[in-house]
Image (cartoon, rainbow, N blue to C red; front, side, top):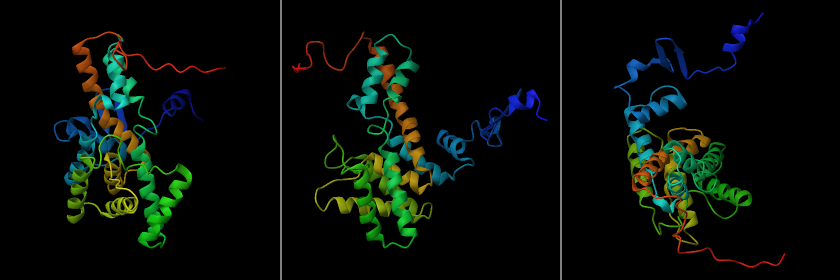
Length: 266
């Protein structure tokens, strides 16, 4: 028979934290043993995955997090956080405003790209030839999602997103040292070659970080969550800078400019 105390304790179950008065343990590791010995990227890995990465895995993981921290007020999430900061809210509210802008189009491309990579990888594992898997995977993607391939091309950085080549260089180096397989780097670069037959489209930050997250075997949905963690650094920085600069009710354009009015007959 389950008593009330057991029912209350069983309401939530977690393998992440074991906590009682005087004790905090994460994934079986006492907090006092982690403090000063584990980096923040290693802590993120342990919290979401369980276990600690090797130093080499942590370094590659950290590179992906560093690459995505900010893209300035050109990014809607950053602009929104800055606007919110002029509305009299706390810095946490300004951060939440920016983070909540990260959806399927702005912020979710890494998850979508990782899903594409994993599906193509599955085709290869099931016996498809590499080139066929690429072509069929892209064909399936376009039939469901349209012609835009998440992780490739950039509305601002043309022809090259400067973050992607450096990340891919690090992946190739890690593959050479047998830290990762390099399989997803192969898939990503083959997709880029396929897309570039018709138009010069380069891999962007979402594609390159998706390669890293797939190489490190993170589930695709975590690509979005990890990007949100990374971008929250930039959101925090811009919210704080705007608070320091001051301003009240700062909108998306200077007050002397007005949006174009379009008359519609109803």
